[in-house]
Length: 242
Image 1 (tube, rainbow, N blue to C red):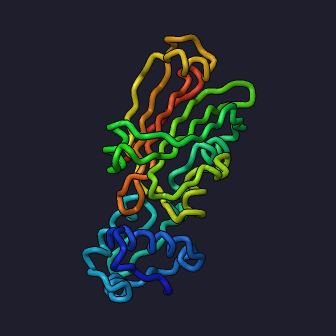
Image 2: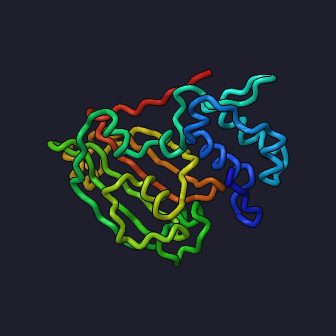
């Protein structure tokens, strides 16, 4: 195993260990049933405590990616999705899996000064500009969602990126930014004139409003996203399992 922990990184040790475990899960030999290295050996190789390693393992067991049994060790769950980026689909990836062709009706990128709430979320000064991306998307014949995304300057986006690509895939492949945690608020709104025009509905028409706070492996904020969904064209599904 060639993976290692960067003890000088601001990313917590358990988060780094989790990433290493996800990489192991994706390895063909572990997909085929090989038992993962035991906790003592793996903790020693990574130079971390067993408690830290177990924290990462427990999370993946909870997600259903690993199965841990006494006396037999820890194995990859059959049919497990191998990475966090695949577990958490971007809008483009989700629509592709559903067989829904998607068209970008509008795509605007600009640099703006954050308001107080956004500056506080990103923990930056209000005089530091952030990248803002607006997209209106939907089926080829009609739009049904209007997204507004703000990105932390730490990422290093220039504004020249191809934002037609799946967003989180692009952030991971080009900037080594892995979106790991999403916190969301969902509510019902009446569309204002601007939103109504973009979604081709009447002003005051019902929209599903979703506010998403996205964090990386170190639980540092990377994106603040607002989504306005046409109420009669989209169902937001949440699955919980006990």
